[in-house]
Length: 68
Image (cartoon, rainbow, N blue to C red; front, side):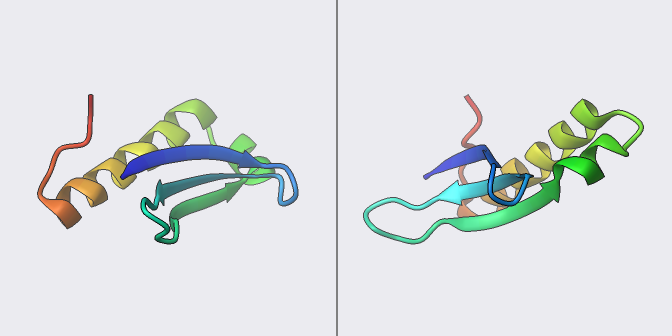
């Protein structure tokens, strides 16, 4: 499993998801539109906080620390 952050050009949004392996489906943790993110006081810090929440969810879910 790995955590993926991608920009969805069709939706103009950033997506943070758990990439499935061995044919399993991806799990979306968070999605935020580019416009909504730009309205945040510190967009980069906010996106980083969403990534940290997703990492903690993975750790909690699997009991394994995926951070490298």
